[in-house]
Length: 134
Image 1 (cartoon, rainbow, N blue to C red):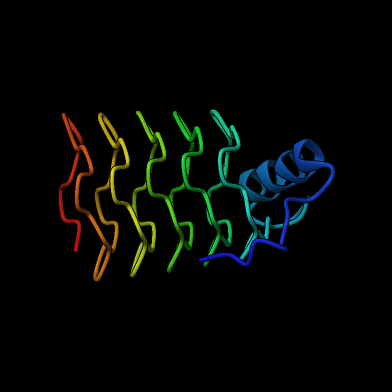
Image 2 (tube, rainbow, N blue to C red):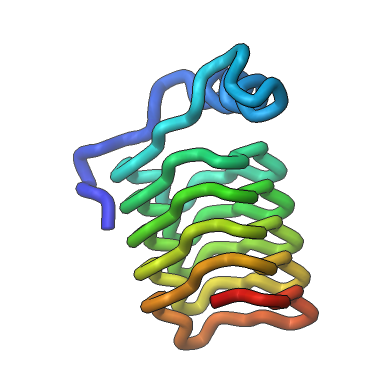
């Protein structure tokens, strides 16, 4: 889990915009978001484009991540406990060892996601697409 002293960047909107451009252009423009080990607990990243972002060890506890696009993102060891991920796309995301306790993943797409060792107690997966999740 993230160290409580590691806080979000001051200009998160610019960081997310640059990352979205990076993801859309396969890295030709913009910059990949590196949010590893940051404390984003309780933040709203509603509908953020975080495809292939680096979020290992990030604290996203109780965050609003509804409609976020995490396809191919690395969330190893991330804390997502109590987070809302309604209709989030986590296809092919790396969630190994992530804390998803009490997270709301209703209608989320987890096809191809690696959830090996993830803590899933109390998580809700109503109408979630699980496909070939590991």
